[in-house]
Image (cartoon, rainbow, N blue to C red; front, side, top):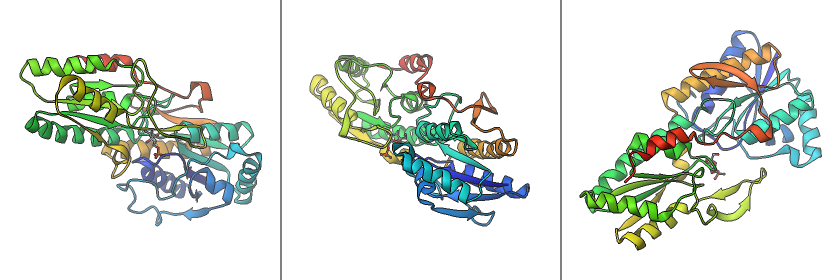
Length: 341
Ligand code: F6P
């Protein structure tokens, strides 16, 4: 068999673990692997490289993806769709493993509906994909944020300051809420619950009243005030119609300083959350997902996505567009709230 593999969308720690596992398992069974470069762009333009045990040697601890990635959406043009299908045949692929988030897997589903033998592997630091209890990349991102919160705590305390930390997650508050709990944050704002900035200020004042003159507040990039919209950077959209979020942390910091009189700073963690070496958990999940994806191809169970069900690796149908998003479990947010103020 000849198995293709591509990584699409934003990169995330653990992608190389998937690639390595696919190649190692395929080789063990006598199958070959063709790496497609830069996500769907590589299938449109025919950018490929054969992958062997040698090419994936040593990549397990490496962040990013050795295949490169892009946010290319071939379904923006029928010509590109046909190019992908022609290239698929031209390279003699028997199956394709598409590793990505909601956009990449959405394209995978569309190709599957047109008859291409495709399986999906869910990845995103945002952890916002339906059909799996967790995506790989999320654990590493949370660990980056928690380390940052720990560091910000000490400087906030030394200066009697409020530190507002803006984290990624797009329209889901998973990274924010889990990091807030694990980092012991004094407040956390998430997209799923529009906030009243006065309540944030009340929490800061309450802590001050107890002699705690500093606070650390985690703000998800997609959080928005009750009366407002999410803050976008420039209004520009990517090929999947996503706006670039960012700036809400600075806005919250400005309001908190103005209303409470406490010196306040904001920090945007940005792409540090996506970079660097994956945690052991993300290496484990990425590896197990990759192994199971090869099984799906060999069993010709196309249109499926590997997934985490509890601690077991299972598989589910590639989710349709209207069921692809998984927002924050508000039970978890309630747990975080116990520690606010
Ligand atoms: O989906 C992953 C993610 O990191 C989001 O959390 C964030 O909003 C977005 O990608 C950033 O995208 P880009 O890398 O294109 O700036």
